[in-house]
Image (cartoon, rainbow, N blue to C red; front, side, top):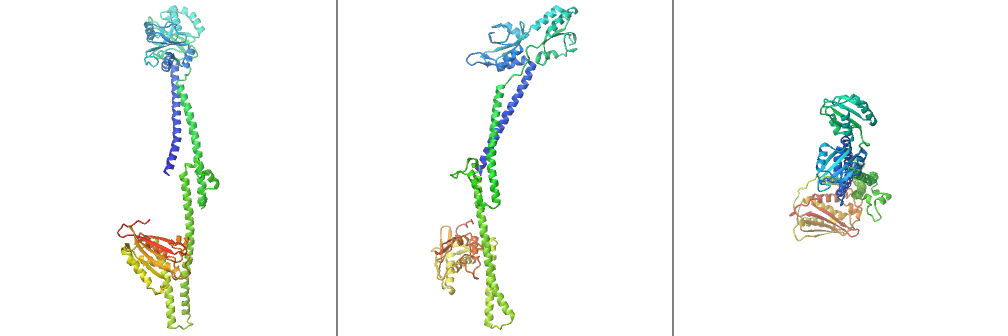
Length: 590
C-alpha cells in the first residue's frame, strides 16, 4: 500500500500545485493591476512630471539601429495633452523628437542649463530628466517634456499693460474682462498673505490661498481643473495668477505593465483551465472506483464473497488480457487486497460451515456414545430396583462389572473432553525433562507386543543407531503414542502391521507411526486433528470419543513439536512427530 500512498500523494500534490500556482499568478496579476491603478492615479496628479519619469523608464532602444522608441500609448497621451518630447545626447544633439516642440536639431550648453533651471525655453514650459543609466545608449541622455507656454507671456503682457502699483487699473478691467470671456479664463491678484484682492473673469468663489496651495497646484497640476500661470511683482509683493483651460483631453489611464499583466492573465487562465481539468479528471478517476468499492462492500456485507465483482464491473476494471485499466490502476493494490480479503472471507465462511457441521456431528456422536452406556446402566438399575427377579452372585458380579465398565467409559469420555479444552486454552502445563526416545519407544512397542488381546496385529520397531534426547514429559508423550497406535488398530482390519521408527537430523528428533492399513481420504486427512471430527472409518460403538487425535496434536504442540500426516486410500498411513533436540535451542511454535 506504500506505492498507493505515494501515487495518491503525487496526484493530489500535482493538483494542489497547479491550484496554488494559479492563485499565485492571479494574486500577482491583481497586485500589478492595483499597482497600475495607483500609478495612473499618481500620474494624473503629477502630469507631466510623473509622466516623464515613466517615459524614461519605458523607452527602448531599437536593436541594431541605434534609435530610441517610445511606447505608442505615451505618444498618444502626449499628442492628446498637447505636449512634445525631445531627447538630447551629451553633445546637445536632438536624437528623438515628437510633437510640436522647438524646431531645433541641437542645443547649446547654456540653453540646456537655462531650461533646466527655469523650466522654460522660448515660449514653451519644459520639464527635464537626465538619464545616466546608459540602458539606451553608452552616454547620458536628457529627456525634455514640454508644452506651449504662451499664456505666461500673455500674463506678463497684461501686467505690463494694465498694472498699477501691483494691481489691475480700474480703467483696464473692462478690456481684460473682454479678453478673458473669449477664452473662458480668469485672472486673480493676491497679496503676500494669500488674500485675493482682485478677481477678473468667471472665477470660483474663493477669498484666499493657503501658503502651500499654489505649490501643490504646481506639483500636482493633474488634480486641478485649470492650468495655472503666475507673474510676481517684486515692487508690490503681489502675485498675478492666470487660470487657463487645460489643453487637450487631459490625462488618460496608460496601460503601464500591460504586457506583464497580459502574460500573467493568460498564464492564470491556462492554469485555471488545467486545474479545473485536473480536478474533473481526479473526480472521475476517484469517484468511479469508490462507487465500485461501495457496491463491493454491500455484497460482502451480505456474505456474497464469491461476487467480488459482477461481470459488468469486471469488464470495466480489467482488460481482456487480465490487466487493470488505466482509470483503475491507481487502486490496483486495493483491488488486489479486496480480492484477497474476499477469498479469505469465503474460505473462512466455508471453514466455519465445515466446523459447524463437524461440531454437530461430534455432538451427535458424543450424545450417542453417552446414551449407549447410560441405557445399559439404566436398564440394569431398573432390573435391580424391580425386585421381581432373584439373581445369583455370579449374575450380580456380571451386572456390576458391566455398570463399572460403562461408567469408566463415560468418565474417560468426559476426561478427554476436559483435556481437549485445557490444551486448546493452554491451561495445562507439562513438567518436561530429558528423555531418550529410542528406549522409550522400544518399551511402548514391547507393551503392545505382549498384549494377548492384540494377537491379530503385528508390531515392529526400527531404532536409530544414535541416542536421541528431547525435552518431554514421558506420561504425555506416552498418551500421544497410545492414541496414534490405537487409532491404527481401531480403523484397520485384522492383520494390519504397525511400525514405529526413530531417527534424527542436526536439529530435530523424529518418531514415525506407520501402518499398511486402509488409509483414508483427503477430507479425513484434512480434519484428522479437529476436536469435533470423527473419521469416516469410525464405527458406531463405545470405544471412540473423536478427541484422541486432537489431544495428540495439542500435546505435541505443547512440546514445541510438529505432527505431519501422509495417507492415501488403500496404501496405509504414516504419522511423523518432530521435536527439537535437547542439545539445540527450542524452536518457536509457528
